Length: 177
Image (cartoon, rainbow, N blue to C red; front, side):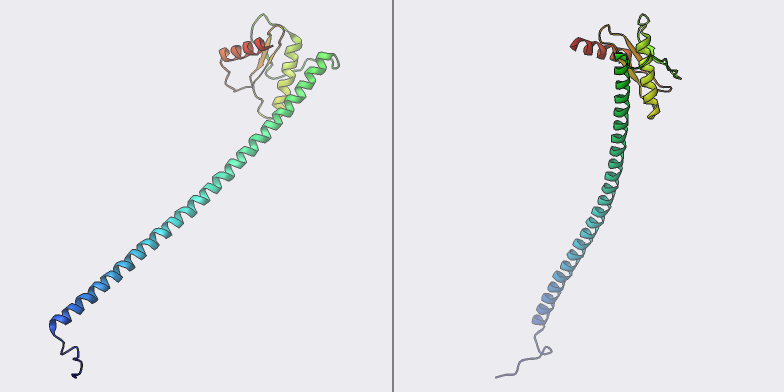
């Protein structure tokens, strides 16, 4: 038996073949490492984007909840003011409260010149005074069902509603009754 030849004694073709195999293996390892680095970079970027998006959505949700709560509070305030105004109107209609004229900075005005109902105008003024004490004072319109007399109140600086929309709404409501 012959002793195994050392690398120095190996034929040059075999040496080049093993060197080529080693280079290919190193390329595969290098490519795998590069692919893993790219995947890690993409994953880290996706995590950073997700974290920022989550924080932004959380802030937006808090803002929406705050607006929702503010709107709910405003609606409840208006509902309680309208309830009080409705009670005052009912008590005046039943004669339990005396008809006291109220002074308002912007009194209610009739929608048609022939409608003159001082009681209805006083009730509209009273209601607008109550609503304006609860905040900005929304525009209101009080309609008498039996003859269609209407009084409306527009606070200072409010855009007036289109008259055709008010008239159409009043006529639809009166037709249903």
